[in-house]
Image 1 (cartoon, one colour):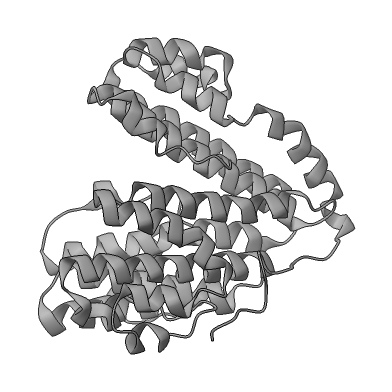
Image 2 (cartoon, one colour):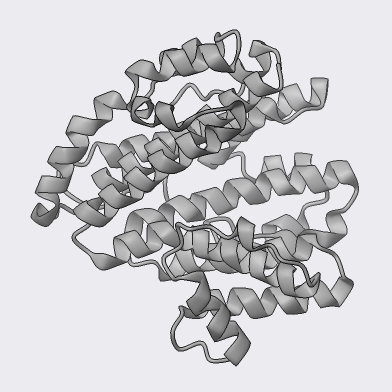
Length: 339
């Protein structure tokens, strides 16, 4: 019977007085984060213009004068993300904190670059400006075949994305190859314990849901290509089970069972993943809340970062729903209870 070395979440973190100032700044900013009540209120806006009015007493108000038409909404979100990363740069005592929080954008840029050379198209507008390493530096390293100026995980992501695509000529293999290298880096190479734990748990949960999605699509044969090769659950677990019910049985003594089982029961009745995805978000947000409880240390800063990133993602969902005139109920059922 499979067990994990923790009943709810792993323990992590040690006090670091060097982060006392950062923790103080974060404590002052936390009350300004949107809670579920505020997000639900935004979802009641009758249209995009009404939603902008409801944002006038939030941290996003300072950017509202830059919104001239509905299509400008990404400016609002981008500016707040810029502010967040600037705050991290200011408060992080250790230089690798900002690097690790920006690296996901570098991996995103690898995906864009690989697709641009494979399909011989200009996708430069899709490059993220938030990456730690400049796109020009990354492109030069790839084109020259000299990777000493970029992390090994980035160069491996590039090479594996290229080779994975040409094995079967399937586009999804580009993204999955890059994702695998990104998770391998964060699960094992990051110097920050909380990030190693966060990404390991996220890998486990993503692998579980991937197993269910592939079973539904009758494509379990590509499991090896898409499975994230890290996490607390052994990779062989996903290959030895005959179906998703068998997988659930194997993890019944882990905390993941209580996260997945209720949503899976609903999935069997209605056929959608909404409850599963919301419960996964609740569980990961619970881990972030544990980090925010630390009195002194980088975890408090990281927790604020993830909370703000979640807020931006949820605000984007609400805005898009208004622009597409989607029912409010579709939005509400996707907002996690734990924020």
